[in-house]
Length: 185
Image (cartoon, rainbow, N blue to C red):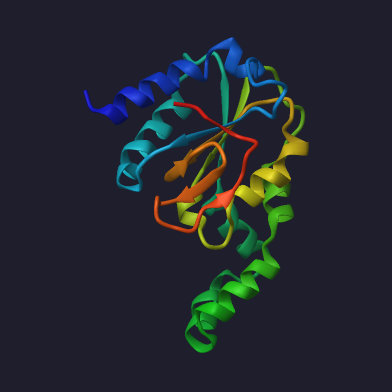
């Protein structure tokens, strides 16, 4: 069995443990966990995610928030999705990125992610982190999400590294400081 499959099996077990679901052992910190993996393993992680989302035997309730799908949905609602390719072609990538950063902010993501009531056993599963780059950076979103999800765990599937202080997407990009999360496995 590959190392990644072993890690994913451990993750499946861990997300069902009462200590994880209740955030015990985190010194009263926010219950945000990061599952780091090599971006080359993306298809394996996506397959695993599809499997656990449909697994009726889990003792937890996974609520997936795919950041890329949310981004596309927000752009569609703003009626700008179809204009994006033309804007990039006519005005350039830098201009497009600036416009999208101005138009689609953390609050739009939070509006799509937030739900009530949170139930015991809920786990917010954040996927699509690599796909939504550079439009949204996970460290900014996690900071903005904390007040809305302090009572349930947040699990981020992250194609990169997290050393406990910095998130480094794809193991290549400039790291961003973020110290409120914990590596899960």
